[in-house]
Amino acid sequence: PYKGKSYDESMKIRKENLTPALLTYYKKPVMIHQGYMQWLFDTDGKRYLDMFGGIVTVSVGHCHLKVTESARDQLGKLWHTTNIYLHPTIHEYAEKLAATLPGNLKVVYFTNSGSEANDLAVLMARMYTGVFDIVSLRNAYHGASPYLMGLTAMSSWRFNVPTGFGIHQSMNADPYRGPWGGENCRDSPSQVVGRPCDCGNGECKAGINYAEQLEDVLRFSMPKEKIGALFVESIQGVGGAVQFPKNFVKRAFDAVRARGGICIADEVQTGFGRTGDHFWGFQNHGVIPDIVSMAKGIGNGFPLAAVVTTPEIAQSMGNALHFNTYGGNPLACAVGSSVLDVIEEEKIQAHCAELGPYFILELRKLMDEFDIVGDVRGKGLMIGVELVKNRETKEALQADKVNAIWEEIKDSGILVGKGGFYGSVLRIKPPMCITKEDADFTVAVMRQAFKNHS
Ligand code: PMP
Image (cartoon, rainbow, N blue to C red; front, side, top):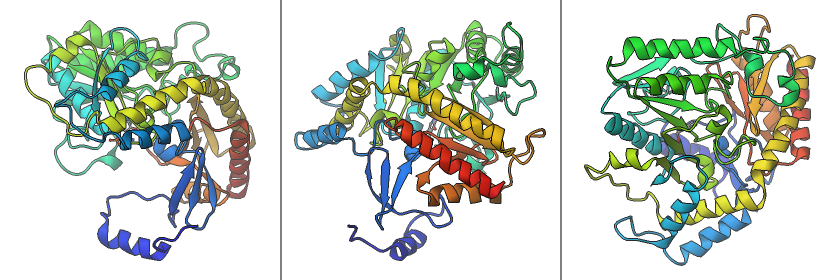
């Protein structure tokens, strides 16, 4: 049983000693003190099914025994040296991690967070292309550092300071909210794809139109002779599990490369088998990026992140020193390495490929039952349920109603995320060890919550 500070004492400390910029979920935030696999336990011993995994971070399960054991083992041997010396763990792990990536993506640089990884990716892109300009999509989330606040194109994550010099934004390729649709051209379980596509059997027109918007940004806003880089999430995470039309990313990459630019995939949420069919989210789009940034699931919640790129691009960073005290420390590398082992041994990717479509199709049934369910989308165990006031206009469901539903789901013992520009998307991105029973339970709890608040 929990014997630490009381809830009220902790809330008092939170008010006095922690910054108000820290986000807490729920009217009465839950106080979690233990976790095991897909389960979290609050200080009163109440058990929650964790369908959000600390924002898509817990990949193979809270305190997974093998991962915990590898951390414990490394703790007793060596925690830290910095990279000024060699230590075997970083080498073994870098080789193993690079082997999961296609093409010439071979060179790894370890950092401690997704923001650090993307900061470095920005720097690398600028060094390599010699162009300062970078483009991202509206509604993207790429991190919170002052450097990245400009790439992250959501007003709620921006402070009133100058951000994003040299950064341009293109129209989001959002089939649900964008002007050209393309909902049926998203990568979905086959039963959903089986419905007639908006474009007949041809290539998705919506994807072409969104890519043309990007081309316009490249043409009008970037330097004329050569452009810099494109940043893109394989599925937008914080933005509300927004999936692009299937052909968009490929077209976007082609347009950027045709003008001498490079392409960066932000796999912070979509990597490590979560989307099921592939280990990396970008593989679902049939592309190979020039730089890949990764975090969250890479360490199952341990602070670890990485940038992986080609030897040529890595070389462009060789002209000065770039240092990160904790990046690639032995403890983080031991954890990261065991996470890769678990993903392989427990066939986690195949599990996502099997359970994801089932889960999505069960959630889609809620669209037939409740008008407030405007859209159910996602791939593997990266799922969004968008709530609306009006199916036709797609006006977002009022915040108080979304919150009431979300609170009820929590009170019923399930933690899901919330996101999207209007805060109206319930985000389901659990530790990838969840079972079919957990998926069924989640659908049942959501059904009841929708019934009570429709
Ligand atoms: N990229 C994406 C896609 C993310 O979702 C996040 C975090 N939500 C980041 C980058 C930044 O990662 P971190 O919070 O570890 O800095």
